Length: 494
Ligand SMILES: [Zn+2]
Image (cartoon, rainbow, N blue to C red; front, side, top):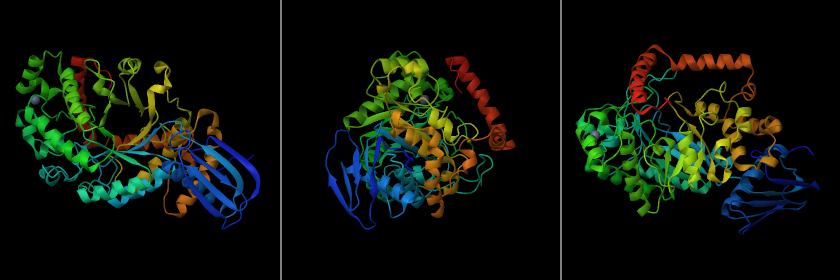
């Protein structure tokens, strides 16, 4: 049988002979099936019957939409019985480095939901911009959402540098996402990546040092001061508003790349370390993060952190850890203790990386459960982050995510036995031409399983973008800072 042009591919498909007449009646029956988000489609000559829970019915309609791209009005009769492999299938959008407005976010929701992605991890706050209105602290957006000329490399340095989402925008996007069965997980970075926040409120940083909104990429040492009680109060006020805006179970509190240079010389932070009898600044970070998590737990929230937060004492297993790079031993230990993780490895799922590094076929072949973890049940799902230092418009978003995100969606949805990476290109081509007719263009087919020659060209362009003269000077400065960090904490990652 010719495979249907569906992405992600369903668990079970059976062609039953004959064709469904155009205009056949559609019957929808909302009911619980064995698995959550599961659905059944039965196409006969005169009826299309759909069964499933609310999400299942939505996914059945996504499948039907793709079937119509392939067959137009005359579909073969068939039965599809389908359910996801993982409950968490995510995409992360970084709105800090470049700010794409509300309507662009909605377009992204349209596209990712077509591939049954059900989580939008929204990176709203970082060194380069604070992108959400917080009533308690208006300067966060008055000051923190504005950035002048930037230099990330080979991207329009004036475009989409400033802007933020009002509460009304957020509510509209949340409603829209709900209609597409997508939960939004907002992220506030704690304690690092705070330049935009500290530019607005330097008093919550160490020693009230003045800070500016950052205009380049990289790692900076602008952290919330963990030694002051006011910092914790400040953070909880922001979290109160975020929790109200995003009525979901999960919230992300970041925790990556927190360079401790300022903490090491801050009397408040050092006093706190002594007072609590902590080993070092990593332990202080973990103490602060756990304090924030305990606050959020009382609001019924489950907290996600990047794997950097595993450093220190043993992180409680009611956190969810998003695994991106390094800390293998700590992740293994966390999983052995019963902790759950989200797979977002930089080795495959970082969509800001060029196709030369991770093309579609590499993603499809990627082993989601690395051998050292032993237990696939520890993984609640997969997520592709899109960092936007060099992504300043929607066209670039679609170029980078299509069709790599659909490939990841297939890893996250389709059980291994039903997956066939070899025919992915054929299946996706039909969807690709449909999306193109709608003005949505992904990377050309030659990039999906990229040749060595083209990869070299792609890598060259990536290097040129990464290392413009302005960037290189900044990176050299940062490299010195990170060397100091590595010497102190023995961390080999950055
Ligand atoms: Zn401090």
